Length: 187
Image (cartoon, rainbow, N blue to C red; front, side):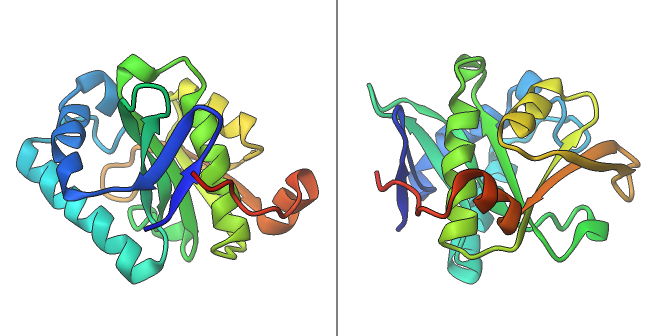
């Protein structure tokens, strides 16, 4: 199991015992406001999603990391890499995304964790391009994407529900020109 570290955070692979935290996160209407159709998910849906998140590591060699505060060990949410199957026009590619408990918004944790995951994606997984997709009204995620150096490439709509999204992206070449090619910090 891969574990990454930042100054304030530990990022580790998700485990079955993370279900309570994920179910709580997915049940919060404000957290889910810009996710898919904006509806919350119940515990069974969260359990199914968690199983897929764990399976992705086995099948793809990358996935989502649980984000824990180094001081006190609180579970703050998740940040990681996934294939954005919901938006076929960007495939093949890998998306970086995050979902944090509201208690941890506004502290820079999403940016800090995503910085480590972006470095992992380019320098360890050897990905050529990483995108990040947000609902056009999600200004918090837009700010994180800008801090990560992911400029907006275009706007589109998600097939089926026509939800308006912005696609941000960068390449390994651009990332390494801006940040170098050092591997992520171990936990």
